[in-house]
Image (cartoon, rainbow, N blue to C red; front, top):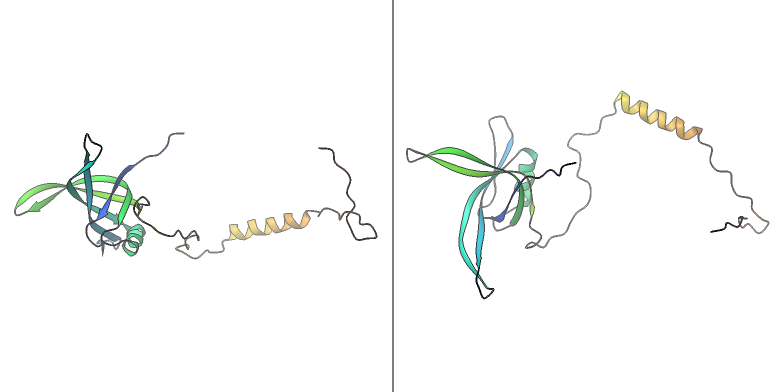
Length: 167
């Protein structure tokens, strides 16, 4: 089976994330991001080069979560894709790039944080469906049909008698 891969983007949030909503009511998170660049010198040291900037955009529930969890200055790693679009600036059409993220997380090489491993809450409450009820009933009937193992014989001292087993 082939491993699924996507583009990634890492950097720092240069602005606080902004949450807005599309015409269809979907959440949209926008932030300007900065990538730092370094050049390795012959002596092994690094020289900092000029940073580059781009737009990071997310949509729907992921956008709402990212907006709640990130702030300006946070180091991040995002998975998604780069898209090019045309924008009119001072009467001239300019082609720009933005990174549309499907997932984003804090960069653990730079950020210290605690991990909460409790499962996320479901968006919609679980509903009892006829199929679910039938499956639960069938499982209960099957469990009732199973005979439990007979208890081992006990001696007068109340301890369990066991046969020796060769290993």
